[in-house]
Length: 409
Ligand SMILES: *[C@@H]1O[C@H](CO)[C@@H](O)[C@H](O)[C@H]1NC(C)=O
Ligand SMILES: *[C@@H]1O[C@H](CO)[C@@H](O)[C@H](O)[C@H]1NC(C)=O
Ligand SMILES: *[C@@H]1O[C@H](CO)[C@@H](O)[C@H](O)[C@H]1NC(C)=O
Image 1: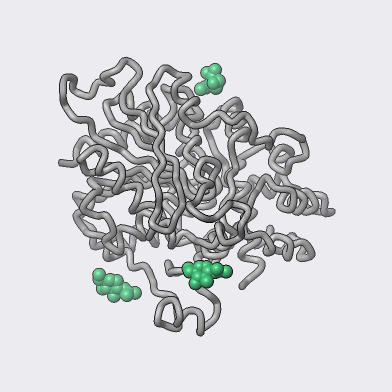
Image 2: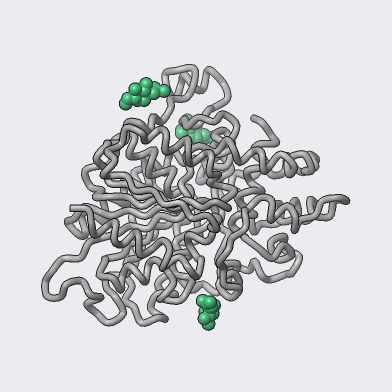
């Protein structure tokens, strides 16, 4: 394993999640990382006058995921056409190191989940295994390292299919999908294998991530500045908990290094989000970042390093053969995404995670897609977090998503 790429990626995602306010980001102001409060996602929904339902969905490998539903808009019908008309379900899938809470942090007029509900959609929010509300398993406790033995391959084969199935069964309708960041990667990989494709009506992919090789240029400096001494403790963790002591201590020590200016690092890495509300960021930090599996970060780091989209590399021919029957992990071939699946992609010019050049590689792999079924939006000023909690996102992105969804038959 390439230590630098793993470390860089872990840092990158952490910074990208935390967005701004470096001192908080490194936990130097105590308390801002306290995840207490217990308030679930539904409390953050009902407080604004929306109904909210919570479900627990079990994956075929035993994880119990929480899923929230906002069945209607604030005023009841939510402009859904009235009467007995069935609403169009839409599933929101967050990225790595955050959870479904991120869709409801801004005001109802600014948050995608609420805007969709008020526009007549039946909104479903999923929470990836290992995040705060999805830390249960039939037989494994989250303190058991085995609980963290998974990568985004498992989200492709277990989490996403079961959640799509569940929403499909509950609503009896094909689903519109919205993914952000790793939520786009998981969807693209799934679609390329034809999974659940008959239950998905269309997909909107924000800050799409599939190829990550250009992140490394921005990260070269970080990796070079990172001191190697602490890395082993990071590796020792099966759970990668950004709020846990080992990671926090690691980051504090990193920032205390002479010549390492964490504020510069932050800007260099996240890209400059143009349009965040300081109070929302504060709220964000109360809930995020969330844990993921260290193995998942290793897998993402492999994507950064190799420039290909492949299944997890066991780094050992014997294990690769054992798991895949091949020496190298199989690739995901995005050209195999059904060419008539309606896709909306929106990416930002300032996004350091979803680098413009990597998005171009992704678009190239979609070049056989039906032109009528592929809609691409480029937003010059946007960085990674603007797509989720930017105060201008409604006008710039969400209205486009809604009209895109409405135009699919
Ligand atoms: C982790 O999961 C893989 C299957 O993906 C399995 O082969 C392996 O034995 C598991 N590792 C441990 C330590 O249980
Ligand atoms: C920022 O958030 C606060 C608290 O929710 C809100 O009162 C204010 O209107 C928001 N500002 C913008 C520009 O959205
Ligand atoms: C991906 O699939 C396309 C056709 O679906 C094929 O032409 C191409 O060779 C494949 N790429 C790889 C790397 O296997």
